[in-house]
Length: 170
Image (cartoon, rainbow, N blue to C red; front, side):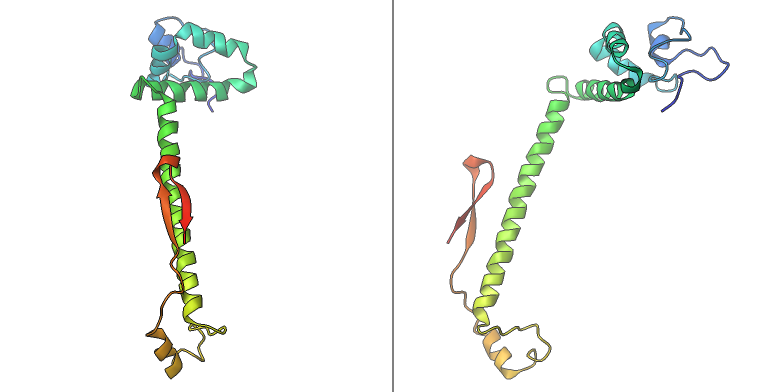
């Protein structure tokens, strides 16, 4: 992260002081985090939280925690600008829905793998492995391959009321 929002030797104010139309002091609390070349960063923070509130928050924190706090404040401000009602909670909710859908898809794929393994095991009794190089061309393999019948079907049913929790049915 930049040490200062101002160029060395220049009197260019940081983005916060520029937006607030004030002189940027040498000990400006905003200067290290809101450089002059990123004006929109502070504009969104000011619009959502207000410069005075952000100033108070930063001054209450130890210097080594301010960078992380500014990152969080900027993220929340940008999220609020994009989605004024939900802010970053809307983004979190959307990501959680994607996780739930992907977990359901993964469970269904895992169930299908189990189903195929059970079918393969039922089709080839006594440890016969069709992928073994010694058995792949045998007449017995060709005969058994045409007679594959599952012993039982195992399907996965998705219960919509429980938000995609998988249920097994046999």
